[in-house]
Length: 518
Image (cartoon, rainbow, N blue to C red; front, side, top):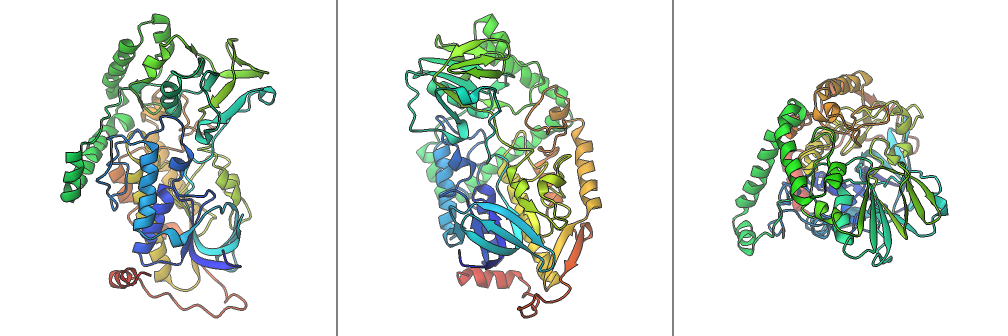
């Protein structure tokens, strides 16, 4: 990074959101941007999560960019290594390498109201940017609960998202804490090798069979030779999930049929009535994310596995103690306890127009305009922001919608011309948030009788989108300037020549820039 570097756009993170933003900026003819990544490679959560059995629970052809179809997916549900390889491929094909700044962690972003730009402090130096796109994602910072006595533990401790591949679990006594999406993949993988596995289950998940298979060579050949078959496959997967949304958002009672199927799935795999009772949830299916696995329940029936229907409450040396008093001697503790989703650490590093951090602005709950912008934080956007998560489909669909909004946001700045910024109006943010929360009231996530990571500390669902991906795409297709205050610099920045309005990026000029390799 050069001293006092200035860029048009700074993108934070190089997962799906960050790389998608970079591709879209290039397609808009913008090449004056950087992608700041704290790690040493691209991939985001698919780089960080390399635990045994890590795979996606969304079909491969739907869990990929529409503008970068992959005819070579090896399985219907691909593993972590294949998804990360796909993101590396995207970085290469769309010539993003020159924009990537690895090992560059953003430590602070401060809005300069006089210059109308962001000052960005990083581990590699300082730079400024007209626009910041935060694509750090909600699944980037692991959450490990503060368990009394954890400092006294004599063995190995790590989170599923920071798997210690140098530590051999074979023959060890292992405590697995949590029963979320990561845990149900880890348990069947490590169970055959460990001496004893103690699973601490605070709340049992609903688990359905995973209809996974290898994609044949004939299918891959067809997708390569006839590209529209790949699009057709993706479209079919998308359409099925769009039809399912009504049950989650408007008619949760319709999920009763799915719940009965899930109970049969438990009964087939678990013959012990006592264990089956422990593993059967008491809330409506869909309230928490429905998990997919063919191996989880069978693994829990093995002789070397104990299921403790209680959370981990205390650690005393090598002894782990559950809230119900159950004790176990273990050599290692693996936390599958999720991430900082509703209290994202990046929010503590963003300082807005009034000197408050984004975390302070969101003390009573995350709120944004169309999942993208926050009042008091001009020219700052987030990808996968508040209420953009999904409970039954692919997040790539939501990311691409937000990329549309980001592209139009930058276009509007160009049209306005000069040194200018857009700041979401508080009334617009409140109106959007009120509409979302009103719709949320009848969803299964709010009425299903569970406590999930979708809810913040106040019990408000600030995570999930209560509608279809089609609705969200329509809501984010264009930026409505009526929802923003337009800020202009009062005078030229000392030492700088007055700025001319940027050349409007018409379709033809964008095409010329891209063809020229700009």
